[in-house]
Image (cartoon, rainbow, N blue to C red; front, side, top):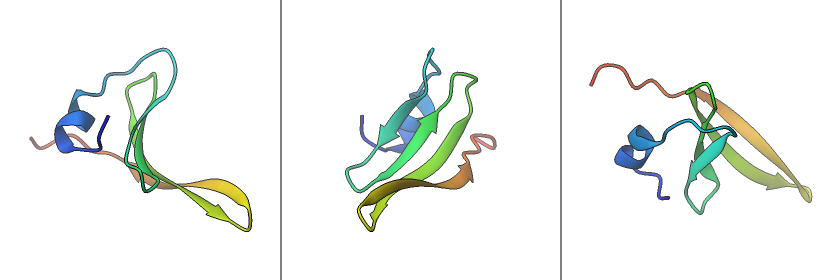
Length: 61
C-alpha cells in the first residue's frame, strides 16, 4: 500500500499492528486500538532502528 493521504485515512485497525509505507523507510504504523503513528526505519553501523515522530492527527477534516 502506498503512503498517500487516502491510504492513511482508509487504513483500518486489525488484530496486529500494520504499516502503510514507502520504499524509503517512512511509514505510518496503525495499531489495533486505532492510533496511527509516524515512524522511519533506518540503518546505522549495521543495525536497524525505528525513529518515532509522533501521532497522526486526523481531526479537522
